[in-house]
Length: 475
Image (cartoon, rainbow, N blue to C red; front, top):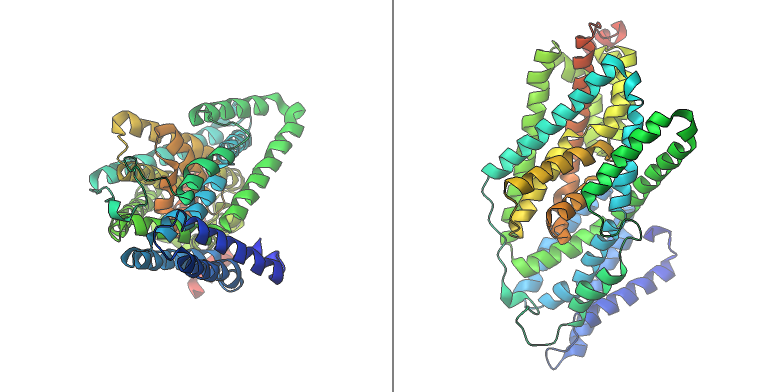
């Protein structure tokens, strides 16, 4: 990462990149003072690189950096738009945004394949799962399907306006006879040509998902002979998770570039559309959370919502702060076994499995975001397109990595399956981290409610440990 580069080399890198952005955003020259403008662009770009690549990573968490980048991008984009310097954003910083999206796209299909294989293998031999395993899988698939349906209903109820395009702020259009700018050529032709995944290129995502499920079942049924191969897949799954996290370290710079580009081209009206998507996702997450706690828990689990929420409060706090189901898993196990008092064997079977294959909040989010972006780009979906979103979201959620930012990979798969432009990810990337914190809470809550429901269906007693009861009274 940048913070590990010696300061001298880092400064040189900033200068080179800043000068490059200034040149490509000024070529071919549009007025009689391109040199002066190039110097000004270079100074502006250097300051941005310095802030997001050197200063902020040493002082703020990644979530705060992304929020800062979102706000800064809005201000910078509007400033460049009203001062008629939009080429810096569209031709120069557009390269950084395009580069970030293409690099993020590289591991998507192999990541989904490996994650689904590991998720299916983690279920184990279906013949030996028994009643608890069958109920667990049915519950997880049922709640995930419910979350996706809820998201699709909401996104179809809420009116969305297509983001207006202001042609006066674009450098070129398909009908423009002027030569294409150097920056646009890099974004549209050069970078997409060279930055392609060497694995599973141009494969249909649904085919990859189906093959991953089949391979996972086959490896699980093979038994001990397949264990070395399974360990390889698990190692790759961990490696892909680290890779995504590494790429997301550059998210603040990518968010700034993408937001600046979007505001410069589309205007401040873009924020109104983004706010509608954000509020729709939050509404869906709150509704699904309420269904889990106040409907499924008392009806199917015969358990008090108040007592349950008090018991899993530490897990909810951990999920919200880390945005990671995997990081929250130890806390969830402790809360359910000790504070709620569920059966230990059921708890230790369901929660690790749920952290892999049960992603209610994530599934709801990708369903809403996919339809939203499709409408922004005027991509017709219809009933068949939304059915593709439903099944794809349901299947890919089986192997979603329980780490921050993993849903971006899911969006890429759904976009490919439905013909939505991949650059549409940039529309919701700025608020993704905030929504990630909220949907992780829904993810782990669904897992924990499932433990109570399955335990009750098996006739197992649920009661907190005595020391926990005394602790709760003191609280």
